[in-house]
Length: 394
Ligand SMILES: Nc1ncnc2c1ncn2[C@@H]1O[C@H](COP(=O)(O)OP(=O)(O)OP(=O)(O)O)[C@@H](O)[C@H]1O
Ligand SMILES: [Mg+2]
Image (cartoon, rainbow, N blue to C red):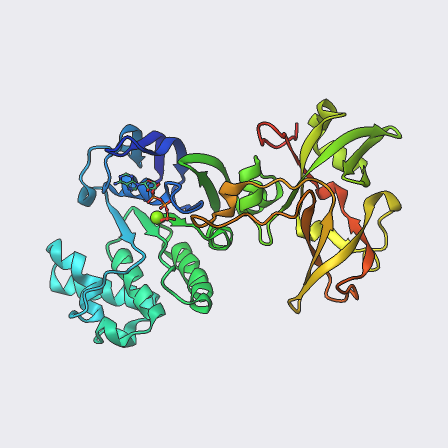
């Protein structure tokens, strides 16, 4: 097995468009790395350069210790799984899985053994004599995986392999693919625009936007400490609430003004962001995740300085939680890139204020029209520079 190293990788298409810009990325040996970003940000281009299906305009690509910029795709020792599995409809499942081995001139007995092994791993043994048309979507997906596994490559490359499946099957296949990868231990580069897929499957997630790498981190780290506004807005659902706020000093500590609401920043909150000291009196972008809000009737330990008052505009009861919407009169900040809008779609804006989503305990009694006290866990508040969008930390 081998890791994959991208150093200063750039892709400029013939029309002069730069789809990937100066990308540095280390996919470690045996790692499951997921690249995620909005449509058109350069994910497939990156994957196709690793596969050798797209020329590299600049930079160096290594698989293991070998520079492979000019190595033919079939000599790179990689296996790919695409969105449309491209199975051969007239061949049996077994022949589909073994096709690459046959092409490579392996002995019949060897092919049979390796196809059998892959089929067992993927629970396809019963299906080997069927044609792809007789399989379910999930089974077809597994055949596509089987075709990749059977070659025992150094690296798996998967481009949105689940996007043709219905939602339920997608969730199931997520777990199947990660388990499979763990069992086989092959270095895997997986590309998706679905942040939930990225968060649930990856050892590490690489977030990319407009051809530029934004952050590479373990899923939890990415969620807890986004480096910039794009990552903050892109990762998480409902997404992080982003609005303008002003930092001030008060009573030896700090205070955060959000429109007409004022919050005391706890010592823990300040300790987490020592660089806030440089922002006293300034407007910053304040990011608050939905779960950092709670009905104060439930989260009663928060002192008055960590509460706001707001009127409930909407409630979505999900059983295990309630998503509660309310407005704050602080100016909304929108990272349009992170919204991944379709062409022509409009950003929903609520005038001067910000529509906030809070993730409340389902026991909340708050109803639409109620004006209630809402607890804010200020240790969990994120801060970003208004001009650069970079996280204010240390
Ligand atoms: N052959 C090409 N010539 C010029 N531009 C291209 C070409 N192929 C892709 N692009 C552009 O490069 C950008 C990145 O494309 P890419 O396919 O890598 O995006 P992606 O992140 O995989 O998006 P999606 O999530 O929609 O699959 C897009 O803006 C696309 O229009
Ligand atoms: Mg793509």
